[in-house]
Length: 374
Image (cartoon, rainbow, N blue to C red; front, side):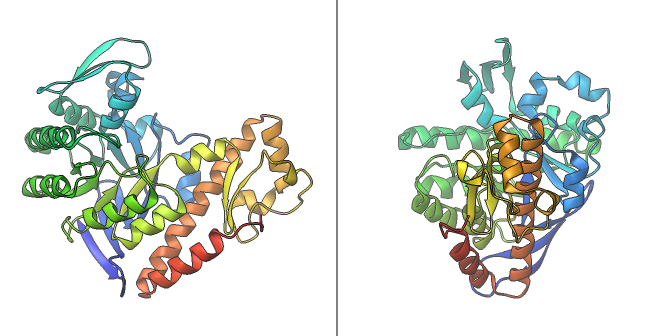
């Protein structure tokens, strides 16, 4: 069940409650990425303490390792990874086309080689639904055809046609097994950077009446202006009464743009990946602990942040940990970055409830993009 709570006065931004099998999720919500049944460099109980109630994992990776048979021993992914809240599982379409050394799209599905051991596999839309049913996903994503920037319109059209066919087969398979699971199945819009194809994809998915709708094929290397234009156009095509999920965005700038266009859910590896590489968010922009200027800096990472990392450790200590290649460096930076993003989301929700999201966005970005203060 999806219930809209507040709407902003001057933008499509909204807050809502999304009721899932493992509890309620307040949106907008950022989903930390736990590709391999773990969010890298952080324990799940810390995410719980932050108020995070929905994380993302990946059916493709889990299918290859440890294997669905192993997870089935635990009766699903939640017990396997000891997470009592909600899990959205990506079908792995993006990983199939970006990681597999060999990948062939067929009418039936995808034939590919594992990037782990080179073994050959074939996944159909039906099989992907079955895998996510075994995982016990709270939100399941169907197999789709991902496309990069710069392809021809004919190639983009073929991807839309195939994605829609697979979406229909996925919905049928999910419907057949609905007595076994209480998951929600979302559709994934494609269409690349052609507005008529985006419209076509949206129309065909809406006709299938999914529980929610994801926007695929954005934030794939296009310029920010193009991203903003297509996000605004694409989000306007989706139903108001269903959750909207923008796949693969995780910077403060893109999160604020997405929230302002009425997006409810988003995910990205950026906050955790950059944390492991010594880059952290602050209220006045990012800082990189590999820079020598922090060697003798006794201040906290972000004086305005109340996370345990900022309340306990200095910039000089964080630089020392990264320079020494200590594992703790990644753990502390990851905790801070995810706390920072979660706090940003909380501030967005509060601003929307007051009908002042645009003012908040301008104020935040005005400080965040300043230079020379970190």
